[in-house]
Image 1: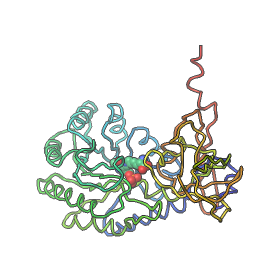
Image 2 (image 1 turned 90 degrees about the vertical axis):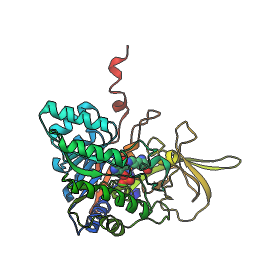
Image 3 (image 1 turned 30 degrees about the vertical axis):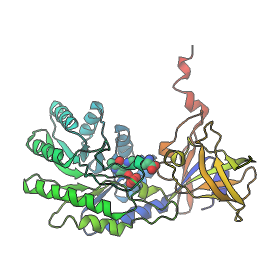
Length: 400
Ligand code: LLP
């Protein structure tokens, strides 16, 4: 990828996405489940750009959404309504109503209270809501605590015992139709064992429900497939699929999975330019024009992202790469071996395609970066750089 030309053409800071890489990730995962009916619902939160969602929709993917805004994005990008699922612990009434009106595939329920709310809203609308219950299998996913979700100390899903009660209730309701069963134990999972254990536990519940004639059609295994940021070992899709499928013999359910990071992390790059270098008594700092408002993962999760100064091979010494924001947490890398830099040099931050732009903000009144897609050797803008005018648009008329 010619980062220098892209930076010259579109300016920095800039997100660049390799759409061919995104495609190959989708295909690899789809292929892994090829022995069975499967639906890959791309987790829109990882990278919500409309053109990214559209790319996956064109390949046949569905969408996993966690707000009505994400559902609207998915519909707008061409995801068929019957491939959209809606998850999340706190859906508002208006979100539930709109999801039912749009007739999406199903809602993933995360509490008994939410189930009753959905039933009530469906009754008012004279509809039958297709639902699935998110089960918390109480398994330690062995990932960063902020992105771990499958333990009872986490706010997500319900215990198996409660799930059973919910299915029994929903099975009899005239306004609820239980069609799926769901779990998601965490993100950036790099070990197979916890996924296998979770699938095993939840598949036992599935089989019990099928025996009770509750017609579950979808086995939703959530997202979480880890990717390589540094040199960690992670799970390959084939083993992932085999581990899950091995728990489902004797059933005919369709596999649903909700990958976000696996699809877009490694194909994304964040380009930023060097403004200055400075050295304190103890540290060398490379100050760049991107900041934590653009990519918050390093400071929020102490996440590692590979960095490279374009066109400079020889490593000089350890440095911190920092942005212009007034916070000590504004960094992309700490104590990384880095070439000597000069004003205008280009730094590439790697594996930034997931939870990069989608978690960005306007902190310090910084317009958010532009986004560019590269596909088949051609590049195109998929989101314009924000302007100062965009940032104040909703305030300026209130100035007295
Ligand atoms: N399904 C559910 C119900 C989820 O909560 C998530 C992610 C996914 C699917 C997609 O997970 P993935 O395949 O991307 O691991 N901001 C954090 C990650 C938060 C993940 C939240 N839920 C980060 O930057 O590491």
